[in-house]
Amino acid sequence: MPRQPRRRSYDQHCAAARALDLVGDRWTLLVVRELLAGPRRYTDLHADLPGVSTDMLAGRLKDMEGAELVTRRRLPPPASASVYELTPRGRDLLPVLRALAAWGASDLGEPRPTDAVRAHWYAIPLLGPLAERGAGIVQVTLDEGEFHVRIGEDGSLSYGDGVYGAGTGEEPDARLRTDAATCRALAGGETTLAEAIESGRAVLDTTVRAAGVR
Image (cartoon, rainbow, N blue to C red):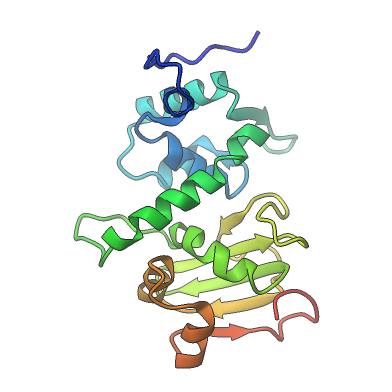
């Protein structure tokens, strides 16, 4: 029998309340955000969730396993680590995160002095614009770092081992260079990717490989 989540329930016969029973705790959806990049070790999750305590992260992961949002598996030799990864039900939270990101985009603004920044956190607002350009792997370079986005043949966001990932990843089909301000403008609907490219705020190189994003 799977472990039952330790969260308290709202005890309301309402779909929204049931959903919040499972994912409404602090840090849970941000763990999902990180695992949408594919399987991650505990230490990697902790590094990319600045501000979370080790006890809190361990508790959230245990709750998420109990709710069947996350599974843990041991990597084969010679690796000696375990990784966490989303279940299909956990991956179904991608539209929720995209909607939350779109809703919160107008409040994002410039980073505050206390804000941590990771380049791959800008992947979510770019998923829609990049999906419109076709299938493939797009390498994105910002001053803050690099990440890659995977787009399926049908325009879906479930291509390869994860929706997006930090770093260079696999050989890309295209490369996009832009900046965080442009990502925020895209997230807030202030510009489109085509407009950003036309104005020089973004540069898209589609000559990397013969297939993919055009």
